Amino acid sequence: MQAALPLQQGMPSLAPMLKQATPAVVNIAVTSKQEIQNPLLQDPFFRRFFDIPDDAPQERESQAVGSGVIVDAAKGYIITNNHVIDGADSIKVRLVDDREFDAKLIGKDPETDIAVLQIKADNLKALVLADSDKLEVGDFVVAIGSPFNLRTTVTSGIVSGLGRNGMGEGYQDFIQTDASINPGNSGGALVNLRGELVGIPSQILSRSGGNIGIGFAIPTNLAKTVMGQLTQFGSIERGRIGVGGQNLDPALAKAFGLSSSRGAVITQVVPGSPADKAGVKSEDIVLKVNGREISSFDQLRNIVGLMRVGEKVELSILRNGKPQTVNVVIGKAGAETASADGKGGGNLHPSLAGATFAPLDESSARRARADGGIQVQDVNPTSAAARAGLRPGDIILSVNRQPVKTIEQFTKLANPKTPELLLHIQRGPGALFLIIR
Image 1: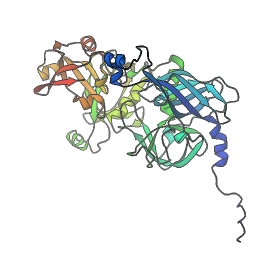
Image 2: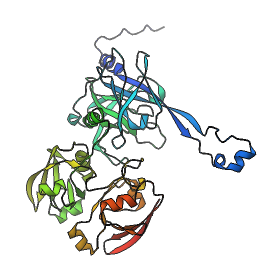
Image 3: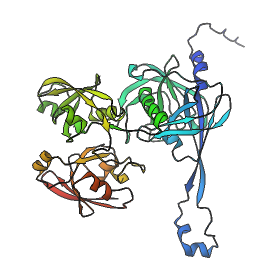
Image 4: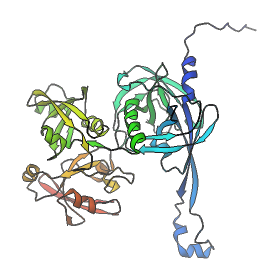
């Protein structure tokens, strides 16, 4: 029989770091009530025939599990994903030492998929939040969570990509990682080798529902910004500057005489908006936002949408080939635009989620030869609005055969309670009707 090899001293190990980090990662159990989708129970004849009382329960209790991370031990604040606790009737948090607490929902933001919980407990351990802007592709990271309800599971990998978006609706600036992330990891911790929090695992890319080495985490800088507003106000006040735009692809770059296709083209500036007051003009090329290079209009939208009203954003632009800097004061979203979030929020029909709408300015009306209307300012290419057939630049002339010339009229006619919308749209030189359900 071969003798066991002696243990080697000084072997590299993540164990010391994990002993410090894992107590801050918690298991979250959610209980909610769901309506029983059985059309027979809605039939009075069926109910009488089988003697089913009218007050018979038509709901069932469902349970789900996820993860969370303690970020403030003194106040008991826990960050998790909105989709982990969405619709919850009760939320319980279990610590690594098996203590269990009822959690209070402080606030949630579906558009960034962040929620903040609070528990009252002693001797909590919190993770330090790292500066996620300093992450680089190739950095080692570790994911900690409860995949498939296997508590305190640790997987390791590297940062595979940064600034990922297009995985759905909302504000996205994901860290991509090959550290194994599976159902139940959502809301947990992505840490660096110092045990500092760099991201919140949120999504996986998989056809089977399991890990294939492509997972996405919300950067801590984004999560920290959202958490600050949720703990202070209980909700998010979206920032806006009042511009529409599109990505600067190679064809557009060539047309503008540029050598690089990185950046965003401003296609519209809403009259009276913060951008208009700051001097931003249509055809400006935005290259940097607050000193950070951007490669798409979505990145510009994300950065602005996560800033607080009243803050200043610095835009590094090219105008007629000459570099300029413009400082814009962030305004309040909804002041001159309308939007929907697709989940029962916003002020428009959920099937219009992913699009923003603004009044038709005089120059656009003159070019389109339109006597008023509402312009589609921006459309997320993966959103419900895009699937419904809306495109940036569309001019909505009427809703359900009622002319619209102001945002107030449009909001009233296209509200979330309207089951079906008939939109009369002018697109370029032509026109069409769209039915939105």
